[in-house]
Image (cartoon, rainbow, N blue to C red):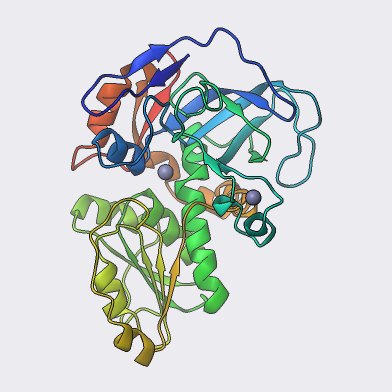
Length: 341
Ligand SMILES: [Zn+2]
Ligand SMILES: [Zn+2]
């Protein structure tokens, strides 16, 4: 079954999916836990641009229960098997277009995105808010350890991987060892970015108006910096102007929170140019970045309270109540959903 979103202000409708035809390279996954991302909340509030009806959600961990013809490989090149516990990319890509071949599979010319597709285009099980998902050829699949809690793994495909991609983008330009990093926004992307940057040797400061979130960020390694930041990671979408003006000369601003609708800001090109500032965008991730993010969670990431970021877990049948709870100002970074009513 899956929960179909019909449109703003309307309750989700349960759709039964009695059978699934698996094409070559398809993988059927039984969802163990999904989490509600901020973009799901934006969509149900009518601020997204998605074709209804559709099954929302794109953060899950699950187990392979069936496969189509042919061998499916995980990102690390090993053979996927029935019974494997996995996470998977938000996007499906062709692996042969110019963008796929140049390290941007998430911007594939023929990209499709889980949780954003009208029901029927690629079947019914195209979003995380269902009991199962049908993963198509071109999905980056990563096997995950049995010992990691589902609450740690479900957000990997979006929040953790985006944070990993953002810090990696900064690290491409800047040695993060000893660097001063400021993160705007203590949502799960920001919290994850803080921990990842700390593990790269940086000193990290978190800026967020919510004192509870700031306190939580301290458990992800955020403390304070005593100078203008060498690196700014903007995950809130609402501090872009501050990010541009506060970053040190020669620094880099990574925008990792602007893919949901955010207010436009004045871009002072003269100031950016004179101060040799780099501005980089991050949106979704590559399969390799997802794999690296999972490795982080399974390794050094165990020292941080990722599991505590999922503050509530609801039954999938209570999706409307869960989405309402996720939109509250004092909501935990993530709310989980388990299949069942
Ligand atoms: Zn997301
Ligand atoms: Zn492509």
